[in-house]
Length: 160
Image (cartoon, rainbow, N blue to C red):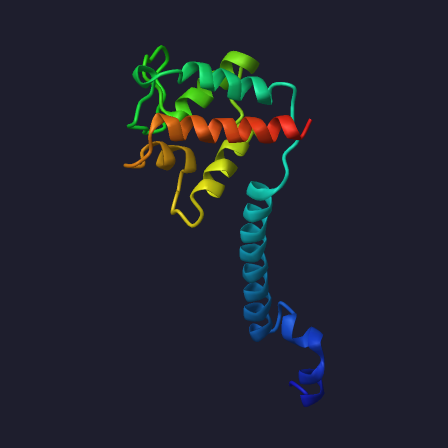
């Protein structure tokens, strides 16, 4: 039999053997997980990133790859064919990363700084994939792409 004294005990409400406690503790756990995932995503994507000796070279190589209109693809799908002559911003960054380091790190400081430059240039834009969506923007030109890369490069150089 339950005594009314137990209702004032906070531990009563979260005990697993109590049916209400099961609901309360599960709800609290779900809320904490959801908050942790949300906060973790924001912290992860907007935190200062550790720089490597390769970051500037990756952005510089991307500028070389996208040197003129004939090298730039306006139709990014985030699928990058090896040996393609036309590359989107994302695929050029991918190729530059592999050229410079031998591998691709999606969240490397070089790529993140380009993403941040896009965020600053287009505040409030709805980009589910910033690099692809910016590249495919109807008013975006190669001059705009170069400006984002130059901004990222300036930020990387200033952090040295």
